[in-house]
Structure formats: C-alpha cells, structure tokens
Amino acid sequence: MTTENHNNNTEKDTYEIDTLTNDKLISEHSYDGIQELNNDMPTWWKWLFILSIVFAIVYLVRLWVFRADDLMQSKEFQSEMAAADLRKSEKDAGSAAFELMLLEDGASLAKGKETWDKICAVCHLIDGGGLVGPNMTDNYWIHGNKLEDLWRVVEEGVLEKGMIAYKDQLSQQQRLEVVSYILVDLVGSTPANPKEPQGELYE
Image 1: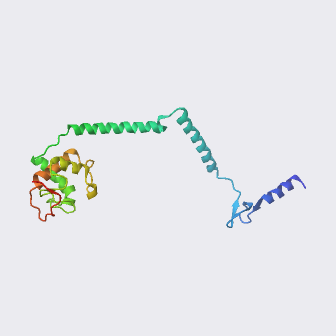
Image 2 (image 1 turned 90 degrees about the horizontal axis):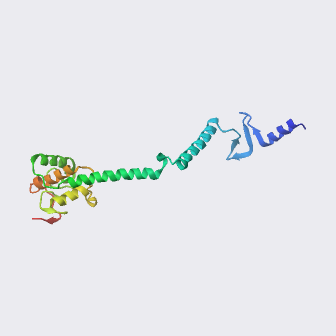
Image 3 (image 1 turned 90 degrees about the vertical axis):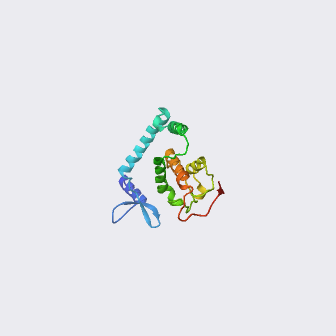
C-alpha cells in the first residue's frame, strides 16, 4: 500500500463525506441526530479572537504599568466624591444664607398659590378643605402649626401618608411661598366641603 492510499484510508476512518454537500463530517460525532461538521471557524471569528487578545494586553499594560487615570476606578471614585462634596458645600452655603420668615406680600402669596394649585391641591383641594391630605383651613394640625413645622413637612415629606419630600422638587423660595400661602390665606378660610379635623387643636 502506498503512502497516498494509506492517508486516504486514514482520512476515511476519521471523516465521513456528506453526499449532498460534500462536507466532511466527523465520524461518531452525532448528537440528537445532528452530525458534527469539520468546518474551520470563519476568518472574521479568528480575527475577532486575536483582536480581543491584543485589546486585553493593551488594557492591562495601561492599567497596571502606566496606571492610566481613565481606567483607575479609585481615581474616578475620588473625583466623583470631590464633585459631590462641592455640590453639598454650595447647597449648605445657600441654605445658611436663606432666612426662614413668613411672607405676607401679595407677589409672594400669589406665587405660593400657584405652587399650591399645581402640586398641593391634588391631595388637599384648591380651597384647602382636604381630600387625601388633611384640611389645611382649620386649627387642627398633625405636625404643628408653626412656620418651621410646615416648612419641615414640605421639605422632608410624610412618606407614611404618601406625601413625598419636596426639597428636591421645589426651591427654598418656592417652599417658603407655598407655606406662607397656607398660613396667611388658607388658614381661617371656609372651604366648600371641609374634611373632618385631624391632629391636635392649636388656638
């Protein structure tokens, strides 16, 4: 037997030939009736694999040898924390300069009513008589009736009652305007269908 015939016989033992497509089928590699082909990987797959290895090497060299800033998570974290601290200091500086005092001028009360009608009336009604939220026109208060009490409620919300915090929704001035509107214009008014008293009576 010649070498060529020996090679042909060995190949026939290893592969079977699909009679329809002439594809080489690996012998005894059949799974659930599916015969495994002996096809090479597509060229673009091979190049993608090579490029991924090159990318990984470049990435690791930049990360561990050159300590690239854009790849170091610790530096990114420090940068984000510094920016957050700056925003907080600016916010604290603005809060320190803000004076909490009752506004009684017509322009401020009109802006407070605008905020009330747009946001607060959904739960307290336009006339303040109360719906989901309590009546805001009588002298019964759940969380106190002072300017500071109402300010805190608007700022921090009452989550267990479904009222969200508005410190990030409304500016300090807007919050003060709507609180002033409640105390100056709504308290003591006569709503069409007032809700029953809730909380403690304040004379």
